[in-house]
Length: 103
Ligand SMILES: [Zn+2]
Image 1 (cartoon, rainbow, N blue to C red):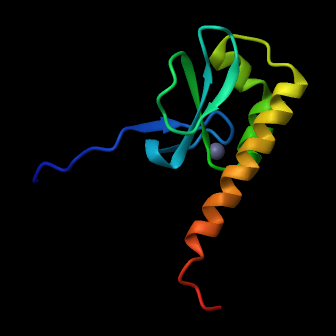
Image 2: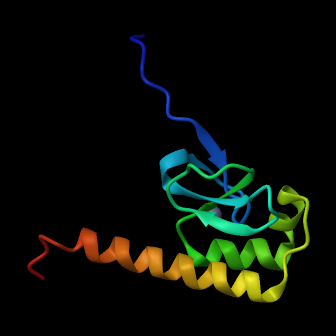
């Protein structure tokens, strides 16, 4: 077998599926204890991974798996803000992908 460049895989804390890292969004607990989406994958801190799908955030919220992975309590308003941000990110991506589509 030739050497294939390996893409790191991470498990989504929402649906528990392992995916290629670029397909996931990182959620970070930064050193100042803020929870935020790391859309560029460059923020410092402890991270958890979610599919680029707000549904997975909702699952992670319900099962508390995100809080477990980040080892912190996440207030409802933070979850709401993350959910909104993920919906916006998904929306932006949809627009980018439909550029050449003539319908
Ligand atoms: Zn998922």
